[in-house]
Image 1 (spheres, rainbow, N blue to C red):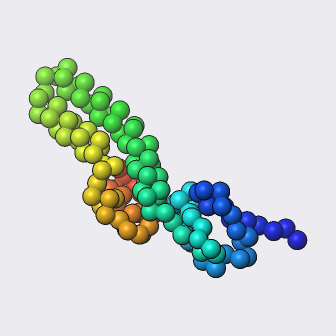
Image 2 (cartoon, rainbow, N blue to C red; image 1 turned 60 degrees about the vertical axis):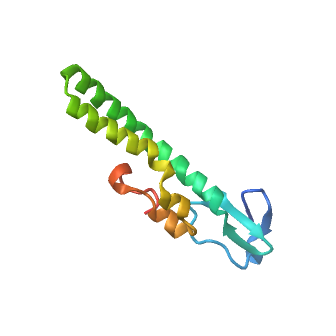
Length: 124
């Protein structure tokens, strides 16, 4: 018989059969923390992971906006330049959203994904 263990973010481990509680959502697996026989999510670590995911997703979006901005400069279109600059600022500010800061549960953190700005949530 093989014994399975679950390790938390700090490499503390517990035998799977002895864990009395563990999160069912594995999106923030690297934020799990062990307290006795209870495994829960460390919200500070989960928020960092969430912000990192935003940064990964927004990188190609910012690059696409850079192309649009250069085209607007070439065309002398100051209105398009302003529109693109606004969109880029929104993308840069996305990790600092108050919904992320104020989230006190994983469900609220996942709901903080701005689909209108970043597209489909990887946490859906």
